[in-house]
Each structure stands twice: as C-alpha cells, then as structure tokens.
Image 1 (cartoon, rainbow, N blue to C red):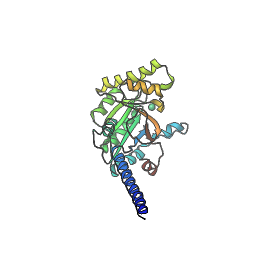
Image 2: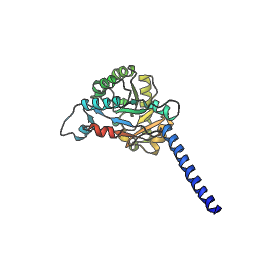
Image 3: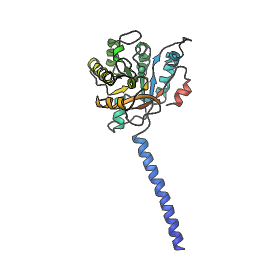
Image 4: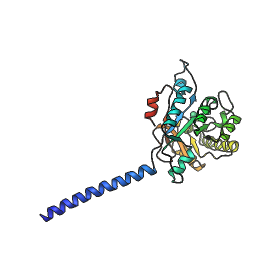
Length: 253
Ligand SMILES: [Zn+2]
C-alpha cells in the first residue's frame, strides 16, 4: 500500500514539475524571442495595367496602404528599424508591446512621393532597401531624396546590392563587389553603416551568406514567408501584395 502511495506521489510530482518547467521555459522564450513580423512592400501606387500582372501584385494602392498603417496605429503596433530589432534580440533594448518592421524594396520613387507622406502622418519608422547602382535612374529615388528622407529620422536605408543582382548565379568576385560596394556607397552617402542586406529576389546560398557575414553584415533578409525569431543571415518576411483586404493584412501580423 505504501509503495502504491509512493508511486502515485512520484507520478504526480513528476507531472507537476514538468508542467511548471514547461510553462517557465515557454514564458521566457516568448518574452525574449517573440516572433516579429517584417512587412515587405515594393510599390505604393494606384496601378492597374492589365498587361502587368506582377506589377499589380507588387503595387499596394495609396488608400490601402493608408488603411494598413491606420490599422497598425489603432491596434498599438510600433514600427521599428532592423537595428532596433537586433538590439531587442540581443537584449540591449526593450521590445515595445507589438513591434513590427515595415520594409520597402528597390528604392522606387513612389516610396518618396506616396509611402513616406503616409508613414510620416503616423510617425512610423520604416526601412528601405536600396540598389545603389540604380539610384537616380528612371522610376527610382535620387540621393538628394534619400538624404531628405534620412533627415526626417524616420527612414533607415539598408543594402540591396548595386544592380539588383541575382547573387547565387554571378561570379564570386562580382558577388563580393555587389555586397561590398553597395554597403560602402550607402555609408558614404548617408553616413550610416548598413548592417543588413536584403538579397534581391530573396536569393542566397551558403557562399553568399558567408561572404555577407565576412563583409560585416549582421543580418540577411530573404523573402520566404514567416516572422522573425532572431537575427540570422536569411530572415523571413511577410509579403503584402496589392489587393490584400485589410482582414488578410491583419491576419498576417
Ligand atoms: Zn528587390
């Protein structure tokens, strides 16, 4: 009889301690390394060319974008930069209640003309990935505009190679140049070190990642779907396509 009681005691004790520790472990994981969405935008423009399906998909209308930013604002989200994200994951900065990173790829002129005025209205930080060799060409921002955005204190600029290169398929030498020169150009133009690179087309491999790390990037940004769970060299993003209803946008946060 005593032996049975002892066995029951051990069983209950084991059960309770395992529940307790799983809660503790889960809790500390959740607070220190919460998943944070990095939103991915390309064009913010009213665009409806029926012959350009991919252009339509990559274009969020100004009114939809405003609604999405309004949703973030009214639901307590705090847009942060990637450097802040890194500081949070390194336990060097406190995370706001609902952090989110808002990113824009390719340095299109509509970031300056359409997206930024809306972002400024909500006092939102954002991150722009700039292919440095395309700056000033058709449809792109120029350096004066980039510097003006930077002076607002609301936009940080990160690397996106020189010529929007498909990094895994060019020569090693060219790949190094794309990663290094774009980083140097951003630094000399803005005075700020670009710590992150968004791989054009989300394309990287082990060689690209190793090179990026060696050149001083602390994080690499891909396009595969998911939320950030730490700083890595192939971080996921949450793509926001044109025509997303607000409910779909909200469900992805
Ligand atoms: Zn791109």
